Image (tube, rainbow, N blue to C red):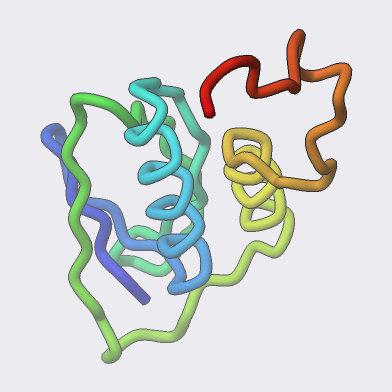
Length: 110
């Protein structure tokens, strides 16, 4: 378990969930963007719920490991955050083609 710490509160969540939040936070920060994400959390009495957090550019995020508690798992939340992170990162899946550049010649440079 990890305790996510923001400017407005601290929230206990699973390791994979916290890591996915951090990955998305970093991708948003690099793009100077922010987003509101719904994160599964566990209260100290063991019940689970969700919190909506604003993360990304101009927000702070930290985490503390809490190895003394059972991990909270939510594969769907992790996958959703991973999809959002991938959507912000260039994937390099296509090489540059001549149509991408108006003039591929070097002209009179040499």
